[in-house]
Structures are given as C-alpha cells and as structure tokens.
Length: 334
Image 1 (cartoon, rainbow, N blue to C red):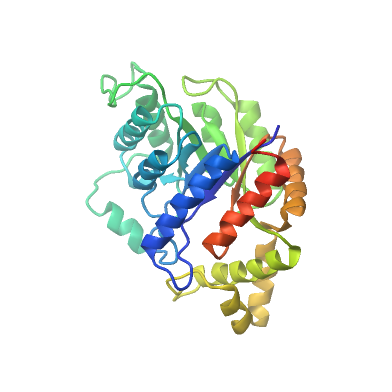
Image 2: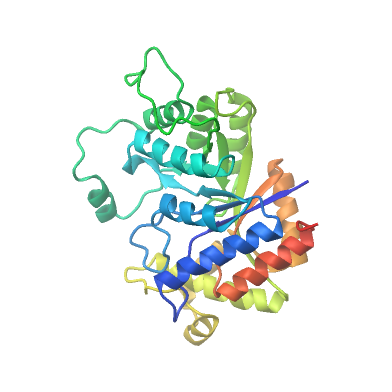
C-alpha cells in the first residue's frame, strides 16, 4: 500500500502574516493526522519572507504536541550550519517526549550568502559535510566508535527509541552518503525531476550498508502537488504557484504568497512563461483522481511505496481541502 506524507513550508498567504501561517500549519497537521497521512514534515527556509518556516525543531515540538499519531519531521535541517551534537540532542529531546514519532531529515541546500555568513560568522574551522553526517549518526545512536574523536561523548537525553534519520538530496552525492551511513533517503523530485534521480536511487539501494539506524534501504520521493475539487480550480491555484516560484527567484520578492486574483491580474512576460513551462515539470496538478494517478506513476517509476506531497498552494482552506480530497481518493482514512 502507498504511504502518503506532507511537507509544509508555512506559506504566508497574501493578506495574512507569519503567526497566522504557523497556526495554519498547525491546523493542516491536525487534519493530516486525522486523515491518515503517515508523516508531516516542516522546512527550514531563511530570509524567504513569504514563508514562516525557519526553525523546524521549534515548530516540530509544537506540532507533535498538537497531533496524536502522525510522525513529525524536518524537511530538513540544513546541517552545515549547525553542530551535529546539538542537532542530535534537539531531536533526542523531541523523541523522548514523542517516542516513535520523530523524523530527522537533513540537507545542505545553499542559501543566501548573507544567511550563510550570519549563521557561521563565529565559527572557526569546519568539518566536512560527510564528517558531520557520520557524527550525527553516532550521536543519534550513541554508538561508541573506537577511532571517533568524540568517542566517549553521549547525546542526551538517553532514551530507548531513536529518531529516524533521512538524508535529503537531488543526486548521486547525497544518495551515496545515505548509503554509506545507513540512513533513509528522500529524493527531491520537485527540484530535479530527471533520470538522475533514478540513477541516484539505484546507487543508494545497491550500495546501502545496514546501520544501527536502519537495516534496509528506505526511499521516499517528494513532489509538489496542487489538488482541488476540479481541474479548473487546480489550474488557477497552479497559476498563483507559478508566480510565487518566479517571485522567490527574483531580486526583490514580496513578503507574501500571491493570491489567485493577483496572479490573474499580473500575468506573465514571454520570458516568465518559458520559466513557468520548466517549473510545471516539477509539479502535479489536477483533481484528486488525476493527482492520485500521477503519484502512483511516480511511485512505480522509483519503485517506492512512500510519497511526500508539498501542497504549497494558495489559501489555508484550499490546502486543507486538497489534502482531504487526496486522502479520500487513496482511501487513507479507511
């Protein structure tokens, strides 16, 4: 059976503010929990004023308390900015309070230069990303490696369960590191929907080394999905999403997610229309049955039973309706 998850950015819809966006994320998580989704992840974005998700660990604690059984995770923590030891302790604390419900997704997506400077200006010599992953796996499992420079160091609290560790990526490098360290692997199809993803996952499965964190390879595929009651409504929502993607990549993006009406009124230039066509390859758009069929095709393509949708489209009510329609189409609540 196909497992469905949600990754939410906490978009700040036009006419709302950041507090409202975070409360809307909370409500979306509650609905996802009731509807039968397996995981609800939140993102880490810095200096993107149209989304409120900047600190996944903090938001995760709130969401785990606000929900009952759905797994709560990060999609993801940008590890190069942080100490693996501190990240491990944050997530062991989450796991201690919400056992068997916490996912640690990690990545290294580049951010604005000023963000990198602000997050790292007090640091001296950095260790490599590969070393950080090894350190994090050691601290999460509290395994003792004889040759590790922090061999005797224990990440607290000491608990009986361990958060799931997921490597996020878009190609062979991340897949290779996930395989070597025995972590689960989440491929960002929404970022790079190409044959490279199939190759990366094939390498991950072939080279996977069992670890204290995971015995067998586990793959998740993440996709942008816009679901509405009708195809026509989904296409309207997609037009607003098209504009948001253009805004995010512009020099002076507005501090909000544009409405359907704003997208209709503004329109697109010839150059923007070309970019929109490229971006449309990154998303699934349609009514619930149409989106369901495309999700099934992607799952078959990647030979996985776990798909994460990113319902990053305008309107809190629209997002709740979209995930509800999709849950009904898949029979999740049954």
